[in-house]
Length: 349
Image 1 (cartoon, rainbow, N blue to C red):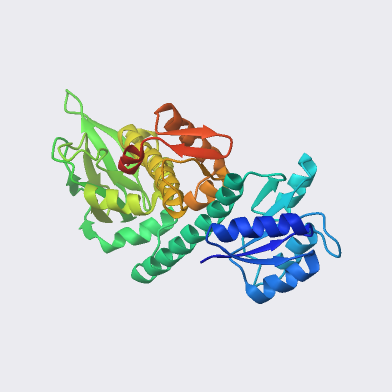
Image 2 (tube, one colour):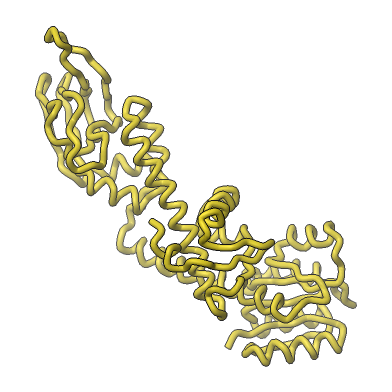
């Protein structure tokens, strides 16, 4: 049973709201003013705090500031409940770090939805942190940059070539993607008169090779070492697995590969966009599962909460939500989201 601290100086509002929350299966602790509310928060360490703004001794802003300064209470979700509806009052509360803001009088459904949304976010983030901690123990070499990728691929097939050695030939099945650890490689074709045309030159630190994830794709040119060269070869399946687990580097790799390989750029972009859609869908479903209500009922979630849990910019998330709305997967009304096609959301990749 989750514990709620409700700080409210109006006796009638305090008692009626506490009763409503208890009937909804919450353990409720109440305080009649801000000063006693801060004391109770530090003693009880509730799962969430609901707090009025205008109160004697210490107002709601002061309560939030006091809790934010204490390491024991600074991460407890905090929701303001107030009759003050001016934008500057709401903005001040959110700037101080409040998680949400409800204006009085509020509907029972609205209050419960706000509480459940905040608790769901905490539960999701905790699970994600636990999973991340577990993964970090399993794989301490997380790939967050191209330099990390360069070091990571050195675990794969090392190949050494002398000057003039052929690395691959045009028309042969394109099985690998390469990283140059040392040396220089040229890609080249032969024209109809047998003259060599150099299409690209790759140096130490560059990536080159197969330009399609299609298993039947062939190399479109020849590749030859121009001096003693050491490279590392990664299969297409291995590369896809690396990028799927470390999608932050996808666009960096696109830039590093340059304009000469438009085929792989398009596929990497598609993979990256796909991961955005998948993360957005997964995050919405996580909130739906963690909020205690039927999954097809509207859930109140702020876009910033969704974005922070999904690990993406709010603008990116909003665009993706708009796409889902156009596709008939969900409805959006203000901060409320209603899932219309849960199975299709689950299948997004």
